[in-house]
Length: 447
Image 1: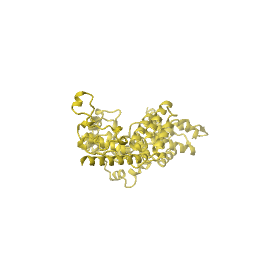
Image 2 (image 1 turned 90 degrees about the vertical axis):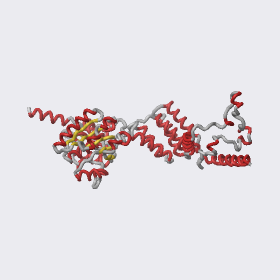
Image 3 (image 1 turned 120 degrees about the vertical axis):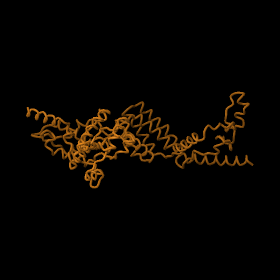
Image 4 (image 1 turned 180 degrees about the horizontal axis):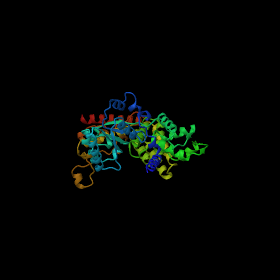
């Protein structure tokens, strides 16, 4: 019976994913995150000091959040209890806290690891507060989302946030070498990888250790046997890496960071960067219609009247995409992204709109001046609506010099200030001329 149980345990271990079997137990086998674990780095100082504190580990998938939490508990000889925010509720939290209270009574700490912590709602997050506060548990939350947006302020005030970074190619290469040298990684099989396949595998992992190990495991299963070993070739990897796996979460930080990078590249007149971020988003699965909407917004905000044609060009490109679809229509979006990056820029309309909106909100319900009101009825005419209005087309040069169009309380408020760029340079000269004529006419009226 004992031999049978041992056999079952061995079989179960063999069927665990490679990423789980290769999980390191000590810092020596942990690759990456040197800004946290290197000499004199914050987490290394904490470990060397022997005192754990509650924390949130924030970073992309496959950067070692779970592994790091396990190692912290092991290093401190604390009990490790794990909860998944996807599967657990308040009852599970209470049960875990009960276990931690028993451990505490025996003089042992408990590390309560909460995976996908951002998925807990407010009530569930609040359930941790008293137990984190009094030290019953050392709370370690893992999240791929920005904690400032996804976690309660009350919980955040009781933990420290550590940011994990995507692994570099060097980090992934060291991990790959360590796994390949471990004879237990592939259930005793001898597996090697060709140099050109190795480079492709590291690039495809995109900074994600879990993805690297998953793809390696699949490739090892598919690799042809040569003598007493299996060799992972470029052809083997081509059958594994059939789709793009770039990091793009369609709604989280990566989404907004990349659209921000696209916007700022266009604003900064860098067509190459604009193209790169556009392609990153499209390659990651972003809806091209969303990209088109953002390009339209960028046009009004950052190009404005410096090149009024840009608005029509973007609309034409959006319509072209709608007619062609993907992938053919995506070239039209690339066309306008490059165009917007290259043309003169002006945020004068954007600035004027914000200023006018603020004034409208702050100044209350100012009445429309009498002379600007229509008089569609006899009563309106009797009340003086429209009296004294000057029809601009009947004036010299089509301009009623000295006429006022703002409420009297606002005086000569000026919101739109054209910049000396593109067409706005000419607009600025025209506006300056008209303002001077207004000033001269009003001085004459006062005399």
